[in-house]
Image (tube, rainbow, N blue to C red; front, side, top):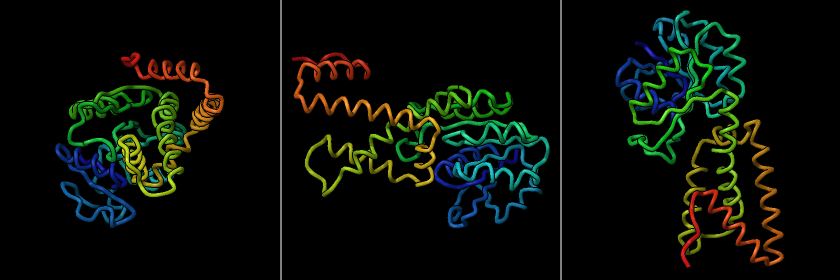
Length: 263
């Protein structure tokens, strides 16, 4: 089967390369530098080259801001039986587009960004397949991810974006707050170094992806929750309230599934 992948960034290039093990994969990126040195795939120079390929799938891996536009630019070049797919981290604008388009679709989200995960060993990673996807498309993604050892979860478009505000926005906020407070060179200390490493890897991601995560419509609710908790912590610290601090530590360990430390 011919598969076209639009967008050849980190996740797009990984996905195209893996699909190319069992399918003929063509890739197009508006930035020709992105596809230089691409292996196992065939590079398209212009979108209109898609028409002659009659792809069974067109998978959109461009950044969220350009996802719907990218679909619209090529949909007239696709055969009616083609399935549209996306791997967007946030699904905000996609449900409405899919409802209006004439194609079957499959929507998923690989939950293992290349920055933190070892894409060659995915046994502890997860991917989400959107419940509204066409059954054939959902089965394709599920089979693909399970063949890589990835745990597959299903949820609706709305459930996905609410979950991402918790699973992505909240950790992002923690790392961004740490990074914004840095005002000098690194200092000794394992805890400091580990936090700095996590923040550095996060900020090594594409700006578009970071903005995409933060601009999730459900992000503000998570941010407000974080700021409320920090305000309470400020009062505890200002009052030097050790009893309340111990209660906080106990709740946090419970949240993390850990018992009280010895001693």
